[in-house]
Amino acid sequence: MSKAGNIAPVILIGRPNMRLRPSARDKVPHSFLRVVSQYSLFQNTVLRALAFQAPIIVCHESYHHLVQQQLDDIKVKPRVIILEPEYKGSAAAIALAAFYLKNQGERMLILPNDHVLEGDGFETCVYDALDKIENHIVLLGVQSKRGESEYGYITCAEENGGSRQVIGFVEKSNAKSVQKLFNNPNCFWNTGIFLSRPRVFLDELRNFEPETYKFCQRAFYAGQEDGSIYTLAGADFLKILPMSVDHAILQMCQKAYMYEMPVSLGDLGGWPQIIKLKVKSIFRREKCIGNESRPHKRAS
Image (tube, rainbow, N blue to C red; front, top):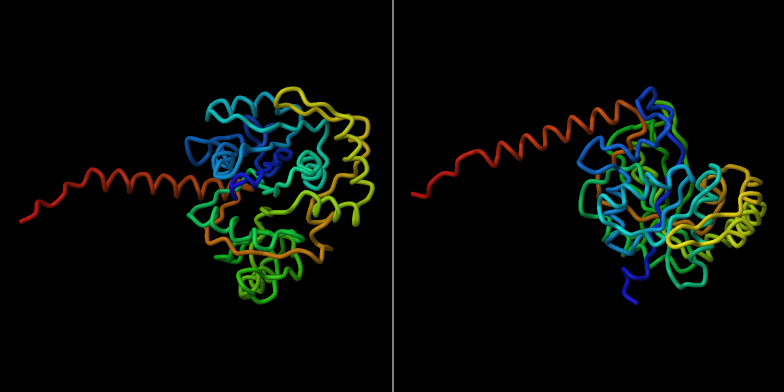
């Protein structure tokens, strides 16, 4: 099996972002909206994932038809769409994908679907990170370009052969704390993107959150697959305590390492970020049009 064929991308679709209200579609995650290009953030994430395998998508059951419509628009067939009857956070969503992939010899590539990544370093960084993945969870971070309070941060040890051992996590913080993080050369933006063997992730979840592990396992194995749709057993899933993967596992895990992605990161968490990226894309497009229309000098 090739490297690309051994990486299973898992795209997570969370609840709608209340910081983007009011809007005409405030009950729909902003990642489905086409705000900076001809494709939505979700579609761009799917297209990015195609460097590896057909994606596994985990979303609320109410988004099934919207997900399918956006996939049809870009002519992508998913490996499976796992439908959650209720939002339970990223820890449970990833656990479901891990149970789906368990014992299949693949690595999970966890992808939030609301990022804008600019640059060519994403795919290369994923392959580099495979060197560390066997018994570890490997996060992909981005060097902060400014003190940004809307991002979470990862603090790391010095680089050692490309990887850095993760020391800790810092949630969204105030301006003074953010500036200190920005000035730390071993501090990176937390993208939420990471790689793991399914068994390693599930072992860590069982260790730190055994109840979440138990109810995810029951809900998954009592569910059923119909074509590309996997429906869970709702009664067990509803017993899960909502929790992010950072709080459930990563902040306690001793097996976490990080690789730096040489890309520019945009997170459309609010209207200011959307407006900034929209203006940036307009200027970029106008610059391209200007360069194309400018007459070439004739060689003398």
